[in-house]
Length: 157
Image (cartoon, rainbow, N blue to C red):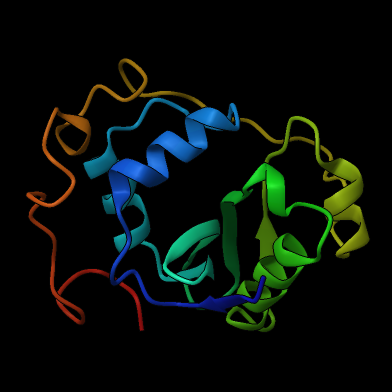
């Protein structure tokens, strides 16, 4: 098993990715199309692949100046404890030098602490309206989602 990590979203089967997330109890309810949009509209992504199969993913939102937000860090259960998550997070961190990178976690504090993350005094959040009730998450097929082309609003460099 040779896992490589890249920044390309090409060739991802988003319906399979959603199914794999659900099998690992990591699905937050986004449709395959909305999952694709989340990654496509992020400034930086890290995708772990074993051959053509996606076995891990993570993304980073950033203002490019001082603040970033790490999210959707996932490694398929069968591939955990092999350094894949660490490699994805470190790769993303190198894309945001000099920036404060925040994150939320329910059960991976030790993992993030090992990568240099520390508790902050308070983190707050709010959901505007109802969770995932928005245009991006409507029942659209993964391949039919309109998306901006690179350099036209995607924010990815």
